[in-house]
Length: 227
Image 1: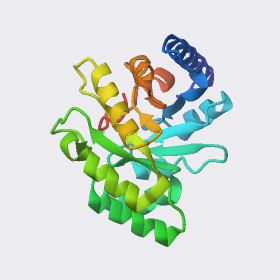
Image 2: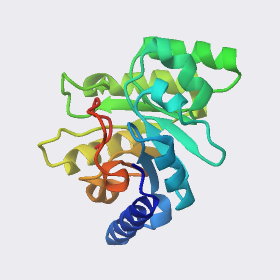
Image 3: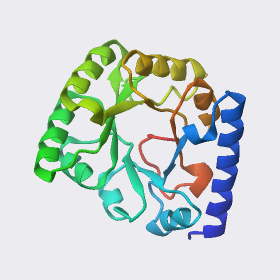
């Protein structure tokens, strides 16, 4: 059951931690976009977060996202691995697709964008730890893929996203992604989750993805894409 007061309080706590981490890193809190990851939580939870001033949300699965979005005043990021047969749905409802990681998906997004007359912002997902169980472009192939996507999508390719290995110190991985974004002149670095977003902010994150710390424990296990 959704508890709006708990969500509002949790958002306040997360925002305070973002502000503290930003200042510790010599940055302004306004540089950080908080993506509230609402996957597996009901639409009422999204509305409660919006009532508390949150405007940017992340969803893992397009079919679930379609049950909640679009919502006036809300921005939607698709943060999970995206199947090509769901690309048209994602293009239709998302403001950003944060998991571009292969040419076939780029083809599907391009085709859908032409049919829909709109193209969301795009982030290349880099498999920053080269873990076989995770989505994302392998690090050895990332530079070439980023160049190809920049040539294809232009300024709509806004940046990079990663999920570091769960048991490792995330800071070196975050720094590596930030350096990769710098090398390609990309401004957006989506990195950092409930357990490690302060380290991500220190490393130069512009977007962090926080779910459990805002909405509480999820109702069902899903593929990891945020925290």
